[in-house]
Image (cartoon, rainbow, N blue to C red; front, side):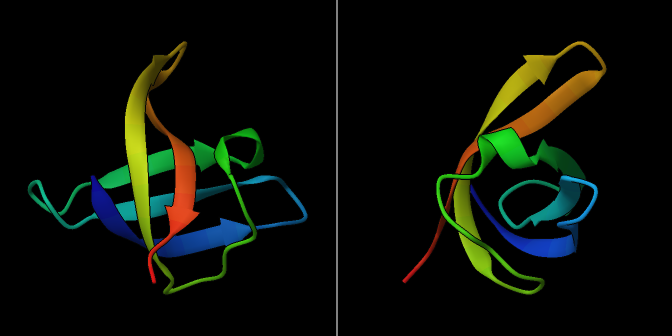
Length: 64
């Protein structure tokens, strides 16, 4: 899937990605799902995994 980093609190270790392929929903991510450093507004690719609190993004990589 593809999306854009909407919000990222590096000091807290979490953020949200706006999904560009579905209905523009926001998907939660934890720093453990990052494959490389990201910043707000970066375009990224990611996968969805079901976590204990619902869907979350994992394997997050910046798009070139």
